[in-house]
Length: 140
Image 1 (cartoon, rainbow, N blue to C red):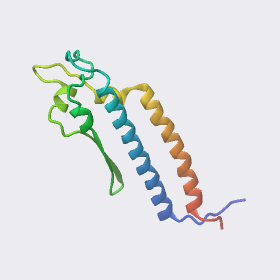
Image 2 (spheres, rainbow, N blue to C red; image 1 turned 90 degrees about the horizontal axis):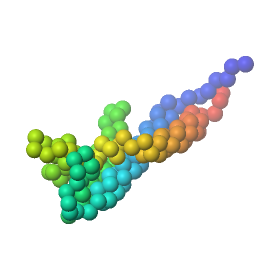
Image 3 (cartoon, rainbow, N blue to C red; image 1 turned 30 degrees about the horizontal axis):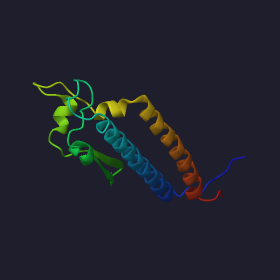
């Protein structure tokens, strides 16, 4: 016996996009918090060792780290995560005169952090399935 559904695609699509945008925002805030924690761990002096996150001197880098809310551009959801402090890029990637003192890359690659994001994705997928059932309309 086949069941027919009255699928209302626009509400389903909108509900999915809203859930995904919310997930992207929460993920960005999660990483923003973790980067700030790393930047506030070590106090100066001395300067940090090459390959280790930079030590905190004034706290400007940590305070400046921001997550901009998502923007929906066509079918894409865009999140901006970063800082406008001029020395952030040289610290993260190094220069010809200074070895890198990365803080963003290691935060993103951290297995515990990735596992937390994966758990959040699993929760959202359940909410998306529920939204599809709600918005799709009753079976005909």
